[in-house]
Length: 370
Image (cartoon, rainbow, N blue to C red; front, side, top):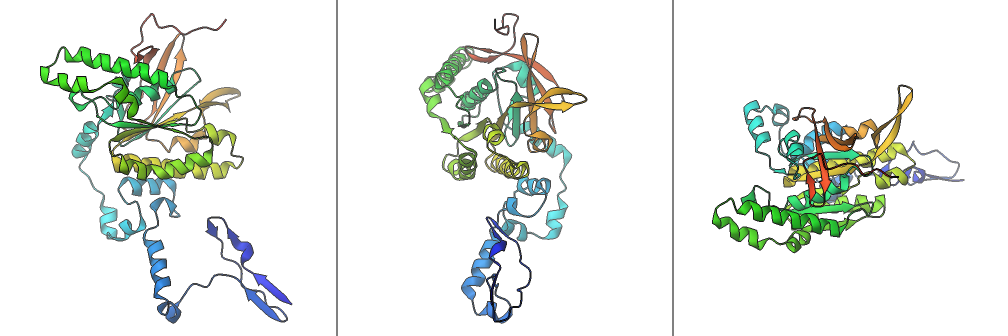
């Protein structure tokens, strides 16, 4: 009698230790991996070096820790096991910071204007860099318009109070319209020309050099058609941004589209999304850029009735630094700060015009369908 053991315990991406081999009448073929120990390890320096390399350069997000602890380690700059093992436990545990310095660091963070001063006011000056901001709302509320507006405004030169950066736009729904981006870019250039009239003449050269075509050329557009493409692209972003260091905003429109349709295993979906959120957080901290995740809404049964809620559930809400909910109030669009560690809960109205986002006015009414 021949017995094979061990093969059934291999799974994609992990290995579950099998039970001891079962004794048989004749032979026992045990296919379980045997790691070098003691003297055997000393006889295999190449294997030893391989094991040490894999262990040392394992990324932090792969460690068997809770998502909150992994997020704190990544935020502190410990992105791999080697970076953690190189410091003492005392240094890891110390972590004391001056609250006054923290306040100044928070106030000094660069922000991307939304072109709506009322909205910028409740956002503390605009969308903050080094943060992951979720913006969600019903269809037609202007989520994509905000995404396109940010991809244009991030390129406003520093002389005009902008970041002078570039944008990455990840489109999962096919809702990005380059014609609309051109309209907003033209309006942005016109606004800067108007602003230049009130400023010193040496700003004129910077204004003349920036054209709508330049703005469109600095928007890196990616169209993803499945959740596997989305995961692969997110894994590639670190390398891409390293090669294009001027990128200051990453926009995903929307983060939920493929995960709402193609995933039947909710537990697996939660794990994949948590890892993706950690990678976005790592990118925001590492490159000092803003990550904006646009989200859809779904119906949630609470207190005997169905209510609208952002998709992906409560567990996903803890994956983002800031959460902004867009909603209708009568005929006007409103934005509400639902969650933020540094911003108070507040709301502001806004409108979507041919020139982009602007302050709400009495002339901007919701289009009613017949």
